[in-house]
Amino acid sequence: MEQEIIAKGAYNPKIVRRLAAYAVPHRSIIVFAFLAMLISTITELLQPVVLQRAIDSYILAGGEGAAAGIVRSCLIFIGLLLGGMLFAFLETYLISLAGQKVMKDLRVSLFRHIIGRSLAFIAEHPSGRLVTRITNDVETINELFSEVLTSLFKDLFIMGGVVITLFFLDARLAFITALSLPPVLVCTLIFRVRAREAFRKVRHWVSQANSFFAEHIAGVKIIQLFTQETRTAQVYEDVNQNLTKSNLGEMYVFATFRPIIDFLGSLSLGIILYFGALRNLNAGLSLGTFVAFINLIRKFYQPVMDIAEKYTILQSALVGAERIFQMMDDGRCIPDTGKDVLEKPVRGAVSFQNVEFAYKAGEPVLRGISFTVNPGETLAIVGSTGAGKTTIASLLTRLWDIDSGSITLDGKDIRGLPLSQLRGAVQPIQQEVTLFSQSIRENITLGLEIPEERLVRAARLAQAHDFISALPQGYDTMLQEGAVNLSSGQRQLLSFARILAHNPRVLILDEATSSIDTETEKLVQKAMKTVLEGRTSIVIAHRLSTVRSASRILVLSEGRIIEEGSHEELLAKGGMYHALYNLQMQS
Ligand SMILES: Nc1ncnc2c1ncn2[C@@H]1O[C@H](COP(=O)(O)OP(=O)(O)OP(=O)(O)O)[C@@H](O)[C@H]1O
Ligand SMILES: [Mg+2]
Image (cartoon, rainbow, N blue to C red; front, side, top):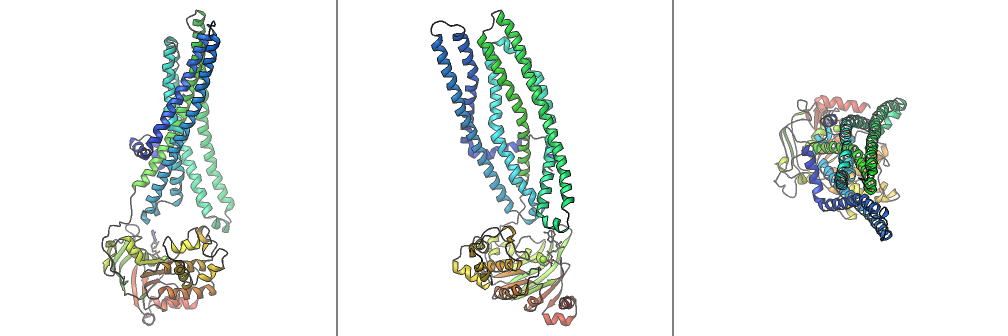
């Protein structure tokens, strides 16, 4: 997709307009930046003119008042230099300010957009790519502001200003100078095409190298366990070889462009020198004008190079913007339009009727699932891996929406309820505990404001209080990314504490499959009992002890309910449950 965008070329008025909309809130800063740019450019253009006056009217003319005139010219020249510096600073500062603000707005709105999307969207955008959008792509847009926007106008302005000043000083000489322009234009156009191609290659390999790096650092454990370090490094080296090659290719384009433009600049200086000197001899041209010309032509060629080079920045910014906007245009989400209200207190009656669901169209995962859970009842779901157990939990909390059938809570279709109500009433303890790199306290409350004693009570009931208090900072202990500083049993206890603190009416417990030591296992069992007490619970069970405590058991196989009943009934039936049971008894 990235390749397509680049191949199409950068300029797309729609993208520019959308990007401009982000600049609009900061327009006053941008206007001031432009004013500062204008003033600093004018001071720059005036310098050669002052020089010309000083030479022609005072230095060469001599006579009375020449000394005073020279001093005055010097003072004006210094004043122009200082003023130029001050306004150049203001310009850089203001435009960076605007760039930073736009960048912040973009990052925040992109993040807000992404966290509101449905899991189908998230699944299609690997986290590495999302990170690239929010860092690299946003950064290129910042560069557009800080490097391109004002300086591009400044360069154009200087070029225009130089041409006008030249004609103002001496029209004939200016015309001769202008003859060197066509070759400059041709060179610039060739450069543009070649720079775009080189840029496309660099971009491609940068992105390859980045994703390779991110993916393999994230999976470093596996690489080490399978002793694949050397091979992986070799592949990375190959990718980097290509990146280096494409970078050098880009450098080559730039390296040839600069000297050529330099040469053309010097050539036109030579022409001026030749004609100017000739005419100077014939007394047709003043020395002051001659010096001013040389000065101005220098000023003309610098922007030519700048503009051509900044074109690549402009291009990468527009590509970055297009990719960001493409993501922002993908509005897939779980619709939160329900207006129904749950009667308080929530009873917690759950019913699935003929529920069909597929993650990908044509590959059904659940087929005709129907069951009910009465308020306060514990229902267990068992089945082999991939049977669709976790999927049932995701549907009840509307992480995904069903394709057909209905799911109700207290008799109300869950799609008719506001998401906040549904998710306040039904909460899962997930198979893989998700903890953030924040304090233990924040991980339990997750933004919920509760008094300290309720927090501690929840942790106590979850059997987590003891290990938390044993940590040096207690509840304020910071977890590392992925909570690697906790054991997997402790992570499970924390997730119980989290649920007890939030106190949902309906609980879905997706039991962790990872085995934990017997000591922690006992704690987990005890905590689980407390967690289930007095709630409607759906337990996706892997342990026999959990299954046996349920009043009813569903056996799921390939997305269908194939058996249903109590532990004893199902054993007596001698079906799949019986087989699963025997399997576990043996191990
Ligand atoms: N996000 C997803 N996108 C696409 N397919 C998925 C997704 N999650 C699960 N599946 C598929 O749906 C099927 C059911 O998965 P599910 O996670 O519900 O199984 P499970 O019964 O919970 O298994 P386990 O006991 O291993 O946890 C599997 O075939 C799986 O490949
Ligand atoms: Mg599962």
